Image (cartoon, rainbow, N blue to C red; front, top):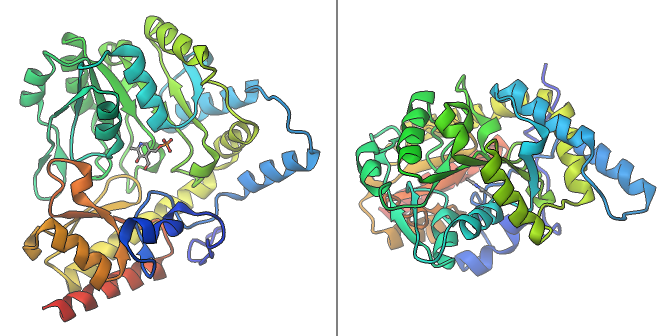
Amino acid sequence: MKKYNFDAIINREGTNALKLDVLKQRYGRSDLIPMWVADMDFASPPCVKKAITARAEHGIFGYTCASEEYYQSIIKWVGRHHGWNIEQEWISFVPGIVKGIAFVIDCFTTEEDKVIIQPPVYHPFRIIPKLHHREVVYNELIFDGGNYRMDFESLKQQAKTAKVLILCNPHNPGGRVWTKEELVELAEICYDNKVLVISDEIHSDLALNGHKHVPFASVSEKAAENSITFMAPSKTFNIAGIVSSFSVVSNADLRDKFYNYLKASELEEGHIFAYLAAQAVYQDGDEWLLELKDYLWENICFTDQYLKKNFPQVKAAIPQASFLVWLDCRELGMSQKDLVSFFVNEAKLALNDGAVFGPGGNGFMRLNVGTPRSIVEKSLQQLVEAYIQHQ
Ligand SMILES: Cc1ncc(COP(=O)(O)O)c(C=O)c1O
């Protein structure tokens, strides 16, 4: 018997939801089903609302500090779910993971230093270093038809001259949950070449269908000594608007340098609701998450089956984590511009343009299925009907 109803359609209009409110600006029209930015259309677990309303009732919102319970909730969550034993002093609040990545780049590199990323990958990995005038080096992932693997041979060459590598663990947009063996090899190459690894683990709690997330820093001494990890409850519990990310750094030297950098601008100071919401979900969110993951996996399987049956020219790369389905549309033979226009102007769907994820992204589109199944189904129907009209 399920306790939570992920089929419920909740109207997000009038809530300043980015997913809805910038459609016209980004896609040129607003009559689209929003299947893009990576938040979900589900209510967060009830414990979030309970913690926030209880605190709001108090009525005084003065300066706030992170409580012992907040840290303990993170430590226990990461230990319980990912088998990684972390310590309180390793943890710091950060005001967002993308910002955290920018801080690491600013703190540990200088202009013109090289930053390696593995595209196609979450686009701020490319944009943020570039905006900081760092050279971005692409170690393109290898698509084997089903999903991605890393190109270690080319990484060995690139690592010789780079300062930082940004790892997406699990990967967005492919949804790969990297294995311990893959991460050990990556750690080895980066450590031996003095390339600091930023491990973005925002999707880590959403490993699906028996896959198990492996925290990068947990795989070896070299990984632990040479990495800065970012985690957050934001994707897992749909609380991105609350901004409750944190970093974990086990190496004392890296930690001193990075946490002093954060401190110098008071960047490590969170706000009342960030601490409360993170603590609430880490203490009471397990049951909700289990049901969510089942629902997401069923949405993914539904999408895959629907496409196989009705639109076999578009293939879903089945994600091992999270709610983003990477659609291989190359068989349609459209230019990227025509492909995007087909989705937007003919199918009336707002997906993420694969090209934005960098090299290897052309011919792909990213579909967010973190939404009730009836909306996934409607989107897929619109897609198929549009293609019938298009031919
Ligand atoms: C890999 C990855 N990192 C970071 C973020 C955003 O994190 P934040 O909102 O904490 O900056 C996203 C959001 O989609 C993501 O997919």
